[in-house]
Structure formats: C-alpha cells, structure tokens
Figure (cartoon, rainbow, N blue to C red):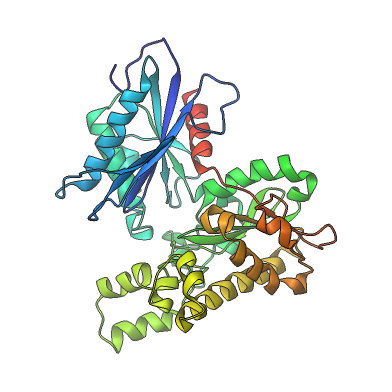
Length: 401
C-alpha cells in the first residue's frame, strides 16, 4: 500500500506532524474509533536534524542513531518518518496529514485545508516565527509535491487567541501598523485549546473561571482564560515576546536592540541570532538552555542560579500582570515539558505567588499529581499534560467531514 491510497479496508488514520528546526515529532491517530482516542496509536520523533548525531525514536522503541543526508537532512528525516508510517499502516489507510503551523497571521483563525495558495500565504509569516514556520512549510511543500491527493490540514498556534479583545491585540505603534497586520497574535494555541477541553473535565466549573495556564517548555508563554477562552497572553507579535525561555529573551526593551545595532554595530542577522538562539537561560547561565542542567549546577555556578532566578521572576511577574487583567485568579495550571515535569520550578513559582494565597502541597507536587495545591489554597494549582497532537488530529477529522 502507498500513503494516501484509498482502500476501504482497515483503519483510517491521521498523521500529525510537529516540525521544528532540529526535530520532527509525529503521531498517528485512529479515526475509526469514536470519539477520537486521545492517545495516538503510534508516535515518535526524529531529533538532532542537522547535527552530528540525529536519532529516531518511536512508541516502544528506544531511540537509535540514523543517517541523514547532510545536504538535505530535513527532507531525509521526513522521508524516514513517511517510510516508517508506510510500514506501520498494514491494511490501514492514511486519510490526512495535520500540521502544527505556528503562525496564521491576521488571515487564518481556524484550521484550513492546504493548497498552493494557502501555502504561499503562510510563507509570508515566516519572519514572525523563524524557528518553526519554515520547517512546517517545507514538510507541507514536499507532501504537496509528492502526494498531491493526500489532504493536508494546517492547525494554527495563533488561532486560539483570536478571542482576545482588541485592546490586548494592539501594539502602541502608529495606527497604520495595526492596519498592516502588526499586532499581538499569541502562540501555543493548540496547547491552550487542549487545556480548555481537559480542565473542565477534571476540575469542573472552577476551570471556567479566572484561569492562568503556564505553557513552560523550550518556548514558554502564559495565557489568561475566562470561560475557557483566551483573554490575554504573554507572547505577542512574535514568539520572542513575554517570558524568558530556553534560548529566547522574552520581553526586552527595544532600546537594547537599537543599542546593539547602532552602538555595538551588530548586523540584523547577528541581533536575530542573539535574540532567538543565544539568550534566555542559555545566555544568562552560559551553560545550558535546559533547567535540569541549571538546577544540577546552581550550587556551584552562580550564573546558573541567576538564570533560574530571572526565569522564575519573569513568570511570577507576568502571572501577577495577567491576574490583574482577569480581576483575580481561581486556578493556575502548569503544562508542557518544564511545567509538567519540573517539581522544583513549580515550587519556586508558587512560592513567589504566596501573596495571591497560593499554597502548594509539597507531597502532591513531588508526586506529579494533577492537583498540586492544598485544600485551603485560595488558588487551585494544577498540572495538566498537554496534547497538541490530538487537537490537530481532531481538527483534521472535522475538516474531512
């Protein structure tokens, strides 16, 4: 069987691709089950693309080294995934590919089936998300060329934030900038959309109140929700805004950027590299963008401790700002890699929010429970694993009808 074949036997499957600059995550969902299962039938990732030691990992198999053509490593990684999918299909059939596309700009507020025109539109948003957009579009372009009959669905990280009021979208630039599309878009929308479904299932009506979700991974943002809809978020025009991240600055005085260019005479490319790749936890610590490395080193490396202190301070500060926007806080939710797994950073953030009445239960936090706060805490603190891939597969299934 070839991918995209329209056999009526076996399972109907949707492939979800989440393409980053050095990795491609994939998940295969069985659409024959109703409702769509939240756990994929099979998933994995190719990581280290473009590096010296790329590897491939999948459900039930430890990662193993792979060889990728150094002239076209990304295309080779995608081809590898497609070959593995082909081998996995058996008598099943692939009915669609859903892509996490970071930026939909001011035009795309809902998932859309991709054709050449949509793809060209999305290329225009590459400067707004240079770490993610080009790689998703490369995968889409390859599949459009090689498998034109296979439906591809773009699911946008910006779409969930379309509900924020205009005052939250505006940038304090001349008004014609707004008319040209310069505005605060917000990101990590697929993650927040999943939380808008999962939180009321677990926490009932409290989740429909004043909620701040903290998506803390290599990229990081906060989202203020009321009635399960985005009201404000820390990322803005680009994925550089807001919280300090692994290698990205987060919010930064634009005067500092002008200084780097005008006084230190750095080029646009050099400044871009600093802002996206050499700042954040990595830049301040001089050690690593990974909080696990910094937590292990902080006792002997003052800069590691300083980086973590700044990271936590920025989270606490922005939670305070969003609490003001919401007019109070009923629930704080941690999600994504760091939010879901770092017991210590959750503790430090909650310690900084004691003034809000946040009371963390140390045992629940250490046990990775879904409710982390004490019964008498004024704010319920929760941990909820995100599931962006399921959201993307769900949207693709809806568009297929």
